[in-house]
Image (tube, rainbow, N blue to C red; front, top):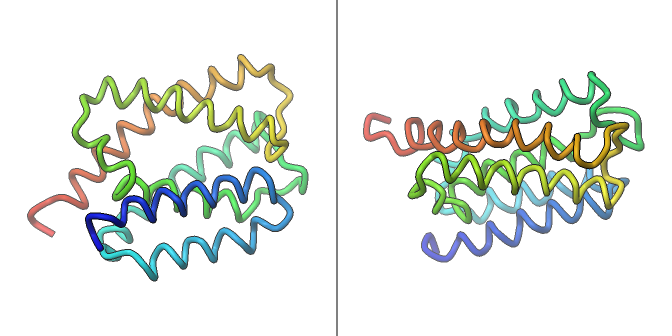
Length: 166
């Protein structure tokens, strides 16, 4: 199952993302179920759990941007579904996005800049998030953040999860 779990993880992450983007009002109770399903099915629960602190780090970044009014939400409070989406994203680093560990960090930074920023533009277009910034400004903010964040996550995973001294 380990070799094919990347596909399960990919489906669960996409399910979580679309749940958050399209079913925002229900996402706070649906996304924890998706996270629980991932852990129920994962063949690497222990290494997955080691990545969870990075989900909090990502959530703190979004919370700071929320406090700075860069992004906001229809419910006007910081949503639980965003934490669950961060959890699913960092779990993807162990599975469907594990190939990023074989890339040069500069390439991971470019992938992060475009992939991360485009994800937030998608959320904006689906009205999952709201911003007073132009789309270009929002893209730029998140491109800078993700160009730093994704390589950091890859290094974190390689040092903490893949370390021989665990």
